[in-house]
Length: 110
Length: 115
Image (tube, rainbow over all chains, first blue to last red; front, side):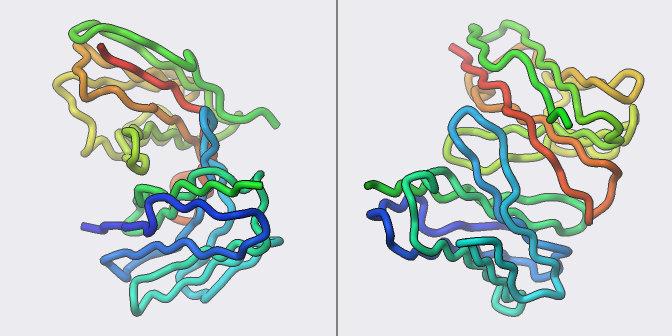
């Protein structure tokens, strides 16, 4: 059974800092990995998707990496802004199912 | 393009009562998902439909939860009777087809509080 763990559970940083969110998984037989953003009272928005054959994906200030052999993914956010405050979830597609981590609550204060 | 719509947005009920949630997926999307997200946890898949047929309901507590997708479009999720531990956000998502490469689009969710 695939298990996904995200560390840290919560993170508070001052505006402008670069930060890294971590995601680990137990079964390397994954099809792809996604990072989602969840704002209070809203649904999930997909930020980045990495296919299992890829090592990383970039979108603006976001960079996600994937290391299947070690069962890890990281989401790097450069020059953080207060608008980045949200819950960030990683999710794996394996055996046809989407399995989520518990999320990291990010607060960026001015 | 309109997104996934859900209603109601919030619901408060007492334990042992029944409740129903409604979801309207993105037009043309064949696959529809219901997830349960308990506070502090990631979403957990309850049931997946392909058109109006069930693909996966292995994690649906069938003694109290039921779901249907008539005519392969809108879907309803029902809980009867509700328990305290059912307090959660219920997310609906849809994708164009079933398949590992298909992107899922999520609705805003229904926040349920059982007292």
